[in-house]
Amino acid sequence: MTGQERSEEKSECVSLSPMMEADPALPESERVCVFGTGDLGHSLGLRLLQAGYGVVFGSRRPHSSSRLPHGAQVLGHAAAAQSAHLIFIAVQREHYDFLVPLANQLKGKVLVDLSNNLRKNQYPEANAEYLQSLVPGAEVVKGFNTLSAWSLQNGPSDANRQVYICGESAEAKEAVIAVATKLGLSALDRGSISVARELEDFPLQLFPQWRLPLRIAIGLSAAFFFYLLIRYVIYAYVTQGKDISFRIMVSLANQVCPIVSLIMLSLCYLPGVVASFLQLYRGTKYRRFPDWLDRWMLCRKQLGLLALGFAFLHVLYTLIIPIRYFVRFKATERTVSVIRENRTTEFDTTTAWRSDSYLSLGILGFGLYVLLGITSLPSVSNALSWREFSFVQSKLGHLTLLLCTAHTYLYGWNRFLSSSTYKWYTPPGYMLCLVLPSVVLLLKLLLITPCVDRTITRIRQGWERGADQRNPKDSQPLIP
Ligand code: NAP
Image (cartoon, rainbow, N blue to C red; front, top):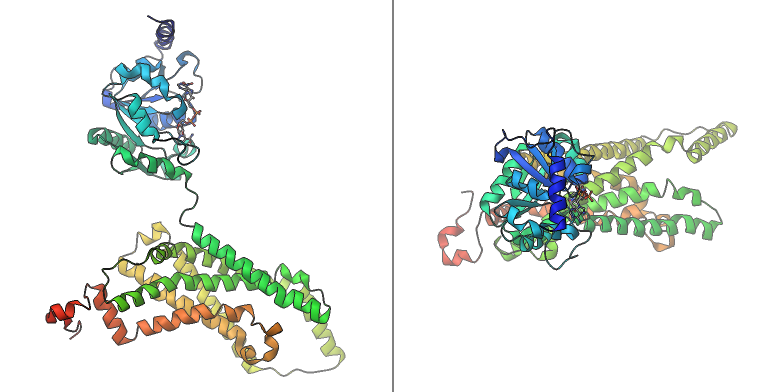
């Protein structure tokens, strides 16, 4: 017996005090072992105890492990391994070599590899594959690594319930799924151990589906900010010597936000329209869309939510207009000058109509915008039928785009025809931002005309243009 084995046996003897002895009444399937008493091991042990499992920790220092959940037992690794069939390895991958001398005790056991890495491709092979190579006699299952110690401690009501697992042995995976279910988690079997690297990369992902929409939002905001800065602030300084740089904070921001919002909302509906025209052109739905279009369609929800965020900022900026010093000063000055000069002003009904219509369309558009945002939440969209969801996202979505576009046209009103609007021969930002939504709405209008709509519906039901010549029966109209 080596000195190390002797000291391990001694430490196990210390841990097996009457208070800490493993409960022999519990069947092996109700006992679970956790190697490692660190953050994750501690939180996982606590949840397992709450779910009714007997928990045995395997630790390097079983006699001095002070932060164990109440009711858990702690033993040396070898003894702990013998107490349960399923063992969670809550130890960093760098220390996995401590498992090699335990190969005999771990033979036939299910080892759940919980480990994550600091960066992608940190090691040549996945941690789970490495663990399997160290302990070939055990059945390694990768899983639970997408949960954090914090979320485990907070319980199922306050955390992500989805866990992914993979491994070679179906029985081992079933055992892990059974534990996950008892913990209130929903386990998804992703296949063999070769998927482990993908699961290990999950926690390292940084908003993968938000990246493109965020880049578009930042790019558009920066481009329009500088465009408007030149047209308003720099133009006023160069041509009139006036310093209106204070307008950057609210006036400019309140122009950039609706512009970016409207363009992003159009970008949300443009790929659907492009896809429909592509299907019309190809005469079939059975050919894959180009990758760029696929990627674009996949991030429509994020584009829409960012557009809603910008619309929300526009609403906030608009609501604070009456309390701005600049606005109050101008209003007082105008009133005083009217009184001083004893002038009267005529009430202009056209302007009143225009102003009310502009505001009303904005409010209606924003209301629908919020509805679109709410129905895109998974908890809400899951409660809707496919028809309800497509009605809200497609029909009401296009109506939102129409209302917001009309709101912007009314904002421009007759200024489209006035040459003074085109400072330095450039159109204002709101005119530029109308190009894309107008194009999307026109294309959509074309798509919903009866003859085009009928063809696109047939294509989506599987009709193919080339097939007409092959089988004349297929060319019969859909609606007799
Ligand atoms: P930790 O707090 O550092 O705990 C690791 C534990 O491993 C230690 O408490 C220790 O337990 C044991 N250990 C340390 N060195 C060892 C060695 N040389 N030989 C044998 N055992 C050793 O780490 P953690 O945050 O709990 O993470 C554990 C694993 O879970 C990591 O692979 C991590 O990537 C993964 N993970 C963590 C989280 C999280 O939220 N923390 C989430 C998902 C996945 P004893 O002193 O009892 O031996």
